[in-house]
Image 1 (cartoon, rainbow, N blue to C red):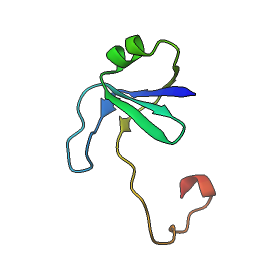
Image 2: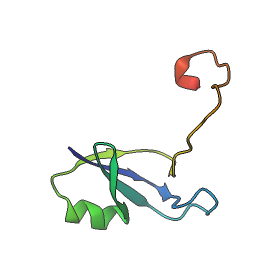
Image 3: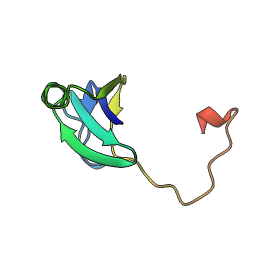
Length: 75
């Protein structure tokens, strides 16, 4: 299933500043496209759209144990 994740800001690299609105198109565990939210919405009209507050940014793979937190969600 195609899913388009959109947010008010998009950061293409961890060391880059967040730019304006952006989106990431995902199918399963693969990123298919990254770019302008309006253009990707128009190009993939059948995609499910998820709107997120904040910044979309590359993920970081953690290879150490997670820190303690009151709930699993906060980890």
